[in-house]
Length: 257
Image (cartoon, rainbow, N blue to C red; front, side, top):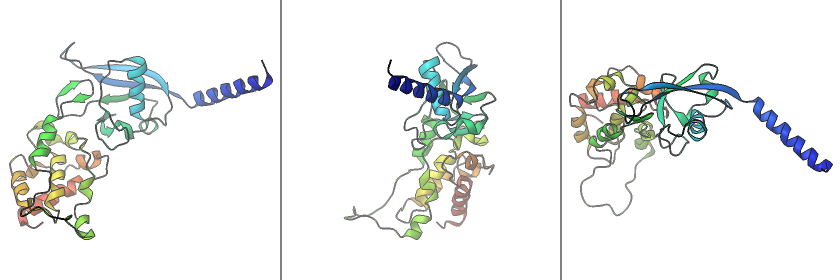
C-alpha cells in the first residue's frame, strides 16, 4: 500500500473518530399506540447515539430507519413551514424539525407523545379533521362583493400591518392542542381557527368581518378563551395568539375592526 493511500486512510479514520467524539447517547421515550394490537398506549424506550446538534426529527428518522420501522409520525418539509410534525416533546408542544436535541437536555430521557385533544390514530399521528373543520368554519378566505376586479386589490402598508402577525400561522395545531379548554371540550373553535378568522376580519379588503364575528360569537367561540397564554407560548411562529383573540373579542363588543 502506498504512503499516499495510508495517509488518506489515516485522515479518514481521524475524521471518523472526531465525528464520533461529538455523539451522545440519548434515550427517547415514545408513547406508542397501535389500535390493531391494543386499545392501550404504552411507552417504549429507544437508546442510540446522535449528534446533540441534530433535531428531534432526525432522531425519529433514525429510530424509524434503523431501529423500528413501525414507528409512525407525520413530517414533510422538515424546515418549520408545513407544520405537520407538531408533537409533545418533554411535555411541551413543539415542532420536531425545529427542536434541537441539545436544547432539551439529552442526558435525561426525552419523552415524545402526540399532541393532546385530538384522537390518536397511531403512535404520534392524530386525527386533524376536527381541527381543520373549525378552521374551515370561520371562512378563511377573502370575501368581497361586486364585479370581479380587473387588477389586484391594493392595500397600504399600514393596513397590511394590522393583521400581519396572524398571516404567519402554519396550521400545525400546536396552539389549539395546548389549550385546556380545547382538551375538555373539542367543540371549542380553538386558537388557530380564531387566528385564521382574525387574519381576514382585520383585512381592509375583506367584507365578511361581520359574518365571521357572528360565527365566533357562538358559545363555542372566542368567549370560551380563558387567557392562559398556553397558545402563545406553544406557537412555533411566535404569533401573539392571545392578543389576537382579545382583539376579536373587542371587535365583537365594539363592532369596530
